[in-house]
Image (tube, rainbow, N blue to C red; front, side):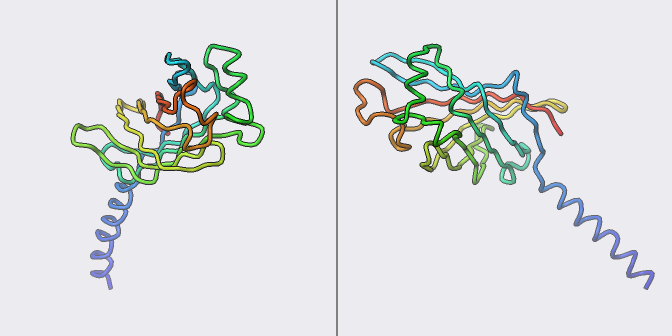
Length: 185
């Protein structure tokens, strides 16, 4: 019986080490130094905007990206494009309609590392009640208990029912940029 215990302890230890190494690191985002921005086109001129109210849940380890998870939530009523009239229009029922659809949400389904050391998060974006696939390209840099995620993706607003169908006044493509400062938990 004693020899069975001696044999069992190393196996149990090995299992716990393997289980621990497959878990991703948990990160808390720092709101004050993080941002969610976008670039759109209105009357053939690019304009920039941002969302002031957002949250993120990041579980990620660069050594084991496939076990990672990224969830981002934006409160659409917090849009700020630097133009009060445009922001008011973006909150109309034809556009973001925050009274009915208060949040936009991205949730990764799969994360992979690319050959250049960057990553792609393949997931689903929900905006105005419509859900569709989105791939976010991102880099992830760590030092001690801090990290920085820098990501971007492009969407077609009409795929999500955002805005008027004509694209001669407002372009269909919207480029989204995410910068998250993180600290380890």
